[in-house]
Length: 147
Length: 83
Image 1: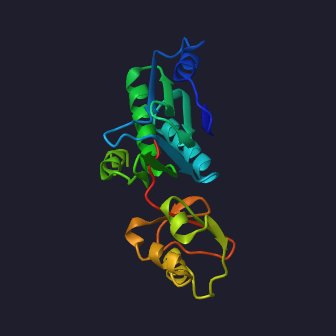
Image 2 (image 1 turned 180 degrees about the vertical axis):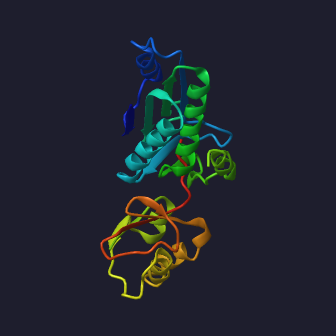
Image 3 (image 1 turned 180 degrees about the horizontal axis):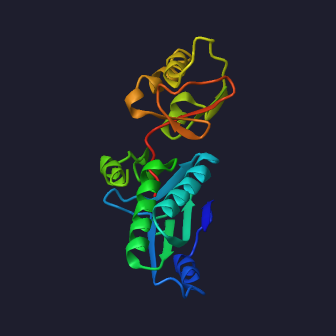
């Protein structure tokens, strides 16, 4: 189990390979990688701010919640902060389990929790200036499915 | 009491944190917000938009009714956008 908040970039392939390594008990590995999107507004960069201390607490709580709900074998949550360029990875979530149902569901659950309950805020830079990204009501609705 | 601000609140208040001593009558997050609102035009601008704000007490999400004690760490911020 690994939960990490860092500014440095990461290699999603390496993280996924690690989850697959020496893992004959798991029939399923599900993962999610979030990337900075250039989007229709032509985003030049995105700066992620977070609440040090609370972020780590929340991520550990999500991990504990996922393990309580499903027979997860291995779990990785890695979330970046700082200034990121379009195409760069922001977040990696990986889950291994005996069967695919658990791996898919736990992975989706963790991504929904990150979207709505992890204290991160995104500021986008475009050619006309920078602005804070508003939370999407759809994300709340998606996250409520797990309550 | 330590108060932290995140995202657009920081530029309006021109601080990312401050140490405050609210009057004894301030006993909840909502009452703290009411009192902070009186400190400066920047504070007033932030705390007049209560519907756009969320709060945490001691690094746990809180509501406006959450009770406070003088040693608490309180944070105010817009709805989160992680992931």
